[in-house]
Image (cartoon, rainbow, N blue to C red; front, side, top):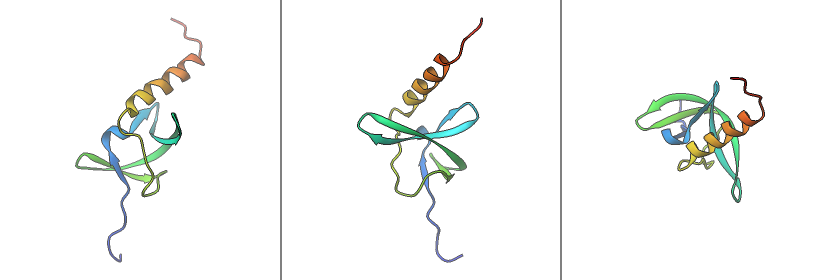
Length: 84
């Protein structure tokens, strides 16, 4: 190949697992976030390579991504009836 390709990598904390998907949260508007499913690549020393779903330079939520994930799962859970 010619030169080095631009690898999109994000901090480990930005990548969250929801059910069978790897997701990141993109700041959309004030206090709102878009959840986006991404393709996980290699582990790069504290960062994770993203092979699909993100363009270089896009911002992702790092601090608080875990909380957003918890919120998302809670919302999903409220949509279902839980039988114990």
